[in-house]
Image: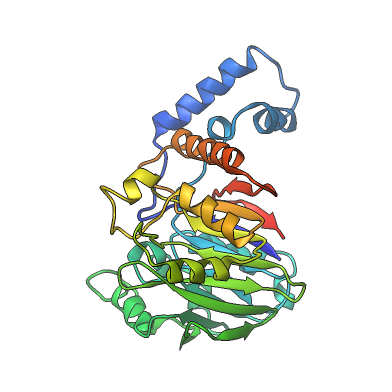
Length: 322
């Protein structure tokens, strides 16, 4: 199973200003200290090996979109944020795509705009030989997608899309089989509800997508145990870490998001092997997100009592093999 991150920002797509790029170039030149590079490949090795991630690259600015790929059967993706456009183009063009069914399965965590805004730009939806199945815990998912393509908001109406589009409402507690995957879902604390998804492939590898979930300080123990069981033994947990712990229990309590500290604690309680920080605050620059990652690594180290929890910081373009 491969997990590809096409969009990792929360709430709003962002793009770096020209001055931000200029500052990265200037910092790289200072670090190179007059060094000569014989080729683009040599210069790229310098960027990858000697510059911090935030200095030489970027975490990206597309909103939530994560692919769950087994390499066979229909394409599977979580959420349709602005990263969906690039996913759609790549999935059609990648090697071996012609050997797979022209079928895309989407699992929607919830219906807020940053998680559905990519659908009007999803190229497969415009093709007549394509089937798209939208899976959601919300019975009103179709209403949300149709609404954003009404004439007041978008020039192409939903009914003009050529693909066959089907909507399926899923129920927590059930297990669903999609291609090579078994899928379960869990209701989460978020306005209009959100749902986490647990994917297990035929080799027993497990990835959990659990974004836009708030974990309130007064949450009942039964609910905490239910969330822990959902993450149990996961090879990768993609978790909402938009806020600091202080923000999530004070000024931004009730806003529907969680923190890096809670994510580490939950993964450790569930015996998960790897955590990906996700749904990055749109006001954060690359340095801010890298600092959050470093703080999370330090917290994991200080509180470790047993096996190490590997902590990744997701970025647009990251690919993780389980």
